[in-house]
Picture 1 (spheres, rainbow, N blue to C red):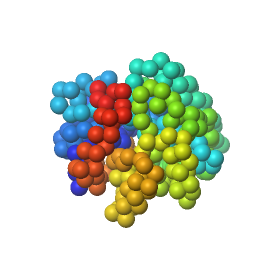
Picture 2: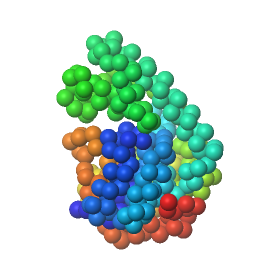
Picture 3: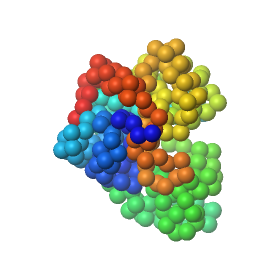
Picture 4: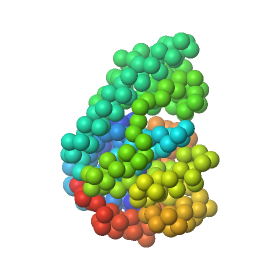
Amino acid sequence: MMAKGDFHLHSTASDGVRSPSWVVETAHANGVHAMSLTDHDSTNGLAEAATVAKRLGLRLIPGIELSTDLGPADVHLLAYGFNPASEPLQAFLSWQREVRIGRVDKIVAILRDEGAMIETSRVFEIAGEASVGRPHIARALLERGYVESVKEAFDRWLADGGVADVPREKLSPQEAIALIHREGGVVFAAHPFLIGHTYLEAIDQLAGWGLDGLEAYYKNHDEEAITEMVLLAGKLGLACSGGSDYHGLGNPDERPIGDINFPDAAVDRFLAFIDEHCAVPAL
């Protein structure tokens, strides 16, 4: 089912394999009319994406995906409609990228101890100008033949709690929500079920800190999962978003851009929420 909105997309500005231009052009070709580029800890792809979106007549909402820690849970937050040029926001993102660089050095050292002899320099070559992260390490492992897929690299070494899991310093969800609100944006909990078995408790806490919505229409949510998220959002007074979480990494659960169960009426409600609450509802 192709949706007219997709608000969770990644490019080469973080850990996706396609350029911002390609992501926008493909979204348009797939029938998407409104989208958000939500790279990890980076807004560097937004200017390029905005140029193409304007040419194609596609609505682009400024977005980003932030990683936060809530106790033992890794909570990802999708932010929309903020001012990408904000100096406080960009200073924070610069700090996050520096933290990512130090983390890569530590992970590569662990992998080499495990017999996977990849080079830090190659990981950074793969990342290019992007915000470097574990998927770039996974691609280096794949390139050298240590694994047969990016998913295998995570399953074997890189996943949270894995042999090469190196925690990095992050904002708390409360701090991240406050940061985005100060810059005129709104914050949604990404793929809520992936928070883990404590997701209901976590979402309740996030709502108390000002969370604006849930990603109810996620790529692999069936009707039962969508219904649960929509009802939970209604109970807590939250809006609902949807996204394919496209990276282009070829993982088994990857879906094409726009290929999500996200009804037109739900897309329209999300866009109306953005128009009402955001300082920069489109670029």
